[in-house]
Amino acid sequence: MNEQIYLARKGEKPDLTLFYQTHSPYARKTLVFAHEAGLADQLDVVHQETSPTNRNELVFSLNPLGKVPVLAGGSDGPIFDSNVICEYLDMLHDGAKLIPEAGPARWKALRFQAAAQGLADAGIALRWETVRRPEALRYPPLGDGMSEKLLATYDWLEGELDPSASIDVGQIALATTLDWLEFRDLPTFRPSRPKLTRWFDQFLARPSMQATPLSGETVD
Image (cartoon, rainbow, N blue to C red; front, side, top):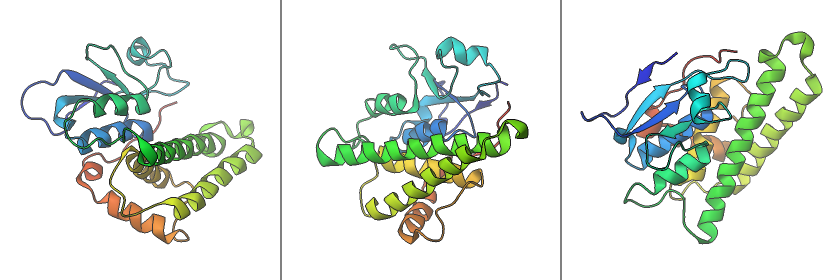
C-alpha cells in the first residue's frame, strides 16, 4: 500500500517525507509534534503498512527494523525512530523548543515521553495476547502483566501530571498514546483518574490532534 496523505499543504512539494501509519501511536506522535512545531506543511506524509509478519520492502530499505515512522529526504539520511524524529524536527523551527534543552523541565518531558512509550509498548503486547496472535498461542498471564503495566502507569500519571505545564514532547507522546489505547479499546484510565482524564480531553481538542485522527487496522 502506498497511499499518500497530504496534510496542511501550501502548494510546493516539501523536501521531507514522513513514512507513516495511520494507526501507529509512534508515527502519530511525530506528526502531532510537527503540527505543534509549525512544520506540518513541510512534510509529505505517506502511509505504509507494516507489521512483524508483513514485510514492507520500501520501509526496510530506509530502516533495518522495518518500522515506521521514518523521516526521509534530508541531507542526514533517513531518521528513525519517533523519539529521534522529534529531536530532528525540533532543530528545524524557530519557536519555543518542544524538547527542553536543560534542567528539570527536560527530564520531566523525557520521563513522560518514556512513560508514554512504555504504555504503547505494553498496549501492543497486550493486543498480541488478546486479538492478534492465534488463540492457541496466546499466553494469558503475559496479557495480565501488560494490563498491570497500563494501570500502574495511569496511577503514576494521575499523581505526576501538571495540567498547567507548557506543551512539550512528553505531553505530545502521552496524548497520542492515550488516544491510541482508547482507539484499540484497551484498559482505560477513565473515570478513576479524573485529573488525567480532564487533561487528555483538553489536549484532544487541540488542532494538532484533530488534524491527525487514527484510522485503519493492522495487517498481519
